[in-house]
Image 1 (cartoon, rainbow, N blue to C red):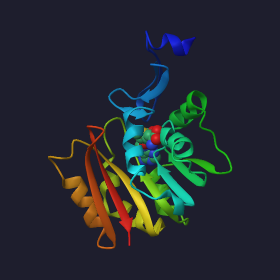
Image 2 (image 1 turned 30 degrees about the vertical axis):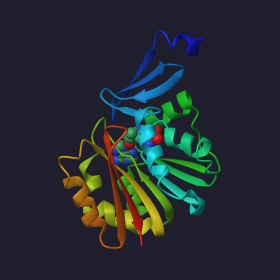
Image 3 (image 1 turned 180 degrees about the horizontal axis):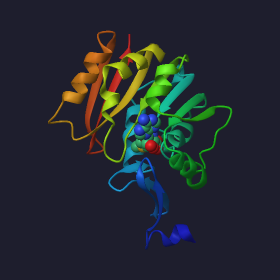
Length: 214
Ligand SMILES: C[S@@+](CC[C@H](N)C(=O)[O-])C[C@H]1O[C@@H](n2cnc3c(N)ncnc32)[C@H](O)[C@@H]1O
């Protein structure tokens, strides 16, 4: 019933988070989405942007995938249902309120092939000794990527845990076609061992950077 009504009257539940401010779960056109005050986080445009990135990589050789910024887990849903990826996923999320909503509102729960880790992605990457064939970087607080994730130390640490021949899908943020400095910074930090492909205005908004380790 709620689903049918949502086609006529979208309705929103609001939750407060110390890290992300107001989190909104909206039932609209028969579908639930997770938003912050100014941005879609999951099951809306952000999911489409990451799905575009996934069409550019070969998932056949991926056995261990790292998702930095789990949000409501929409790309986990796409990986399992649209891309038929059945191997391991490690999802890192700093905000316990978001992890709780992912579970209660979107059915994202840990399993043998899905480890959900409540931690700062910067610290996780620094301390991890696993190797990943694909890393998805989707770290936002509302509309902004925290600047530490454009920095040298983060790129070096990501490099340490990326397997040779592996891919990184980096959601760099909004409206970068005029100011390219964040993309330039990242490519310099990753260095010559990587091939880069940049996609602008993905789903009309975001810049995605695809980095393949040589
Ligand atoms: C756009 S949402 C991620 C959406 C998600 N990838 C999906 O598929 O639904 C961005 C997420 O990054 C998380 N985040 C921001 N800073 C973080 C950090 N330092 N460490 C881990 N997660 C962080 C936010 O709490 C938020 O849930």
